[in-house]
Image: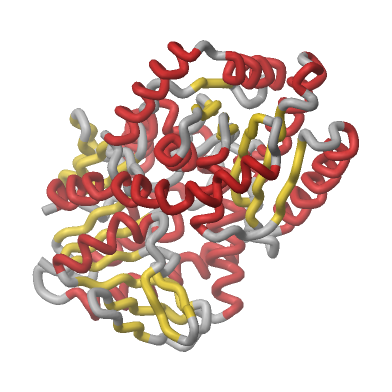
Length: 438
C-alpha cells in the first residue's frame, strides 16, 4: 500500500550538487518505511519552483509557496500563533487575520499535491501543527486512510480557545482516522476539545463525529536506536579530543535550537547558581551550551538571541573557563561527539512535546540527563534526573547531585535509562502507527 507523507520540512539535503537523504529527525523513522513500501514525501519547496526530487528509494514532491504565503503560513500563523499557544506561552501569542488565509491556502496546496501522488488505496500520513487542516482536506479529496501525528504539546481547552479558529483547527484534524500524540495527557486534552468544539461523542480513546470514529492515541516517538549505537563508535575519537580540550574539568552539555520554549536562559542562570552555591566546582566543571540558529525572521526569536548573548557573555566573564557558549549549526556527528564527551546533559525545556535530545544523549554517552518534567520524555525515561526548569535552585541542586552520585546509583540509573530509550525505537514507532492506521 503506497504511503504519502506530508510534512513541512523535506528529508533531503544537497551535497556537492546532488540530493541525498538527510537521515535525522523524522526522516530517520520514515525513510526505511517509504523505501520498503514505495512512497512519496510532500514538503514545502524553499526554492519555490515545484521541483520533484527522485532518489533511489524516495520521491520528494515539493510544494511551491510564494514568499508572501510563507510569511503568513509559516512565520506568522504556524510560528507566532500556533507554536506559542501549543506550548502555553500566551504572552508570546500573536494573531493577524490574514495569516489564517495563508495557512489555510498552504494546507490546501499540500493536500492537493499529496492527492495527485497518492492514487487508489494510498495511506496518507500528515505531520505536525503546520498541517492541521490537511487531514480533512485529504478526506474531502477522496482519501480513505489518513493519519496525523502531532509532534508538539496539546494545550488545555481554555488555552486553545484563545485561537479564533480553534474549532476549524480541531475539525481539520478530525479528518484523520488515527491521531497520535506523545502523551496520554495531550490525547485526553484533544478529546476534550473535540467534544467541546466539534460536538464529537467521546468513547474511551476515540472521537465519533459525522458517523466516523477517529482514534486518538498516545504513541510516543523515539530515536534511531541502532543508528545511534553505531554513531557512538564513530564519534568516540572526537569525543576524546573534546575531553582533552577541557582536561581536569567534568563536562556538562546543553544542545538546543534557539527557542523560548527550550529554557536556555533559565538553564544558564541555574548553572550560575550551582557555581555560587558550590564554588569548589568553578575549576572542576565546564558547561558547553550549544545553540543552533532558528526562526530569526520572527521578532520574538531576535529578542531572545540578544538576551541569550548578553547572559552568555556575562557568565563567561564571571566564571572564566567554566562556561562556553557556541552559537551556530553543528554537524550531526559533532553534536553527538559532544554528547559522548559529557558527564551530564541539561535538557530543561519549559515545555516540549517529547524532546529527543535526552534520548540521543543517553544512547551515545555514559552520563545522565537532567531532564525537565515538562518535556514529554519525562513520562517515559526512567533513570533521568527530573527538575522543574523554573526552579533555578532546584536545578542547581540536581546538577550537584548528578556530579556527586555514587557509582552504584549512577549505574542503576544508567541501566533504567537505556531500557527506557530502547523501548522507544523510532522505527518501531513508525511501524506501529502504520499498522494501526492500516
